[in-house]
Length: 152
Image (cartoon, rainbow, N blue to C red; front, side, top):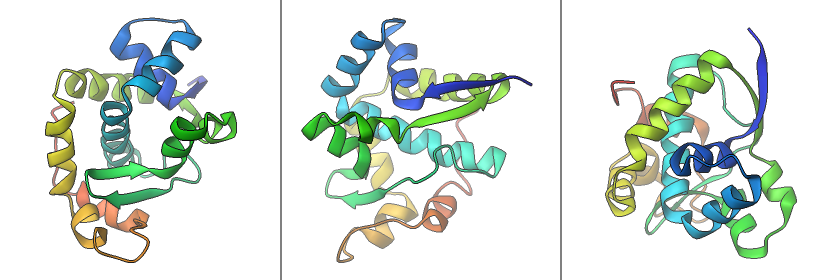
C-alpha cells in the first residue's frame, strides 16, 4: 500500500471544507481551533485503537479547562510558527486515510462544545485535568478509547 505524506490538521480542514487549497485550509484550522483540536484528539485515539500506532511522532496532549488540546497545535495557532504545524506531518496509507476521513465526517457536523464535553468525560482528561502541568500520557489516551466506538 502506498503511503501518503499529509499534514493531519490540513487534512481535517480539507475534508470539512472540501477545499484543496492549503492556504485556505490553514486559515480554516486557525479560525476553527476548537473544532479541529477536538477532532484531532478523537482521530488520534481511534487511530491508535485500530492500528496500534501513533498518528504523529511526538504528540503533546494536555488536559485544559475546555477539554483536551494538543499543545503544538495551540502554539501554532498563537504564534503562527510553521515548525509547530510540521509536528502534524505524517505518512498514512490509503486505508488509514479513509479511516481518518470517516471519523472527520462523523465529527465535523457536531457542535465544537459537544466535542469539548465528550473529551471531558474521557479518562485522559479526567485523570490529568488537575495535575500540575496537565500533560497527558499516551497510555491515558489509549484507556480513553478502549470502549469508544463511532461506527466508522
